[in-house]
Length: 168
Image (tube, rainbow, N blue to C red):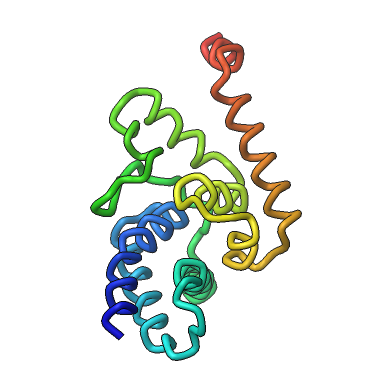
């Protein structure tokens, strides 16, 4: 039991960071993370494999966010903030303080919702394709397609040729 409790505590910053990327509001993300973790804790007996805890909790967090969007009819495409959360920053978060990092977060915020979701789970949370599919409720091929499209759009929007077009 202590091991599961420690795992939940360890996952809390990651769940918050994921929800922050989805909703773009630190206060709302905090509320949603608390709700998702409480839901998960209440259902922890249903978890047969503790190794699957991250995927399971991200799925609960994703559904908590979807429920909140339906319930409050919030716009789910709120531009993403540049807040960094959690005690251990993700590798991508390390660059957030510099100009390129700021531009990167802006461009990430401009991606379509599903592309942002899968890119965050793959790059920042370092989840496998099948795990991402489970979290967002789709199949592996859809995840791969969205990842490829997101990466292509980011490359195009961050390329020097794209920057020159915007300056003209």
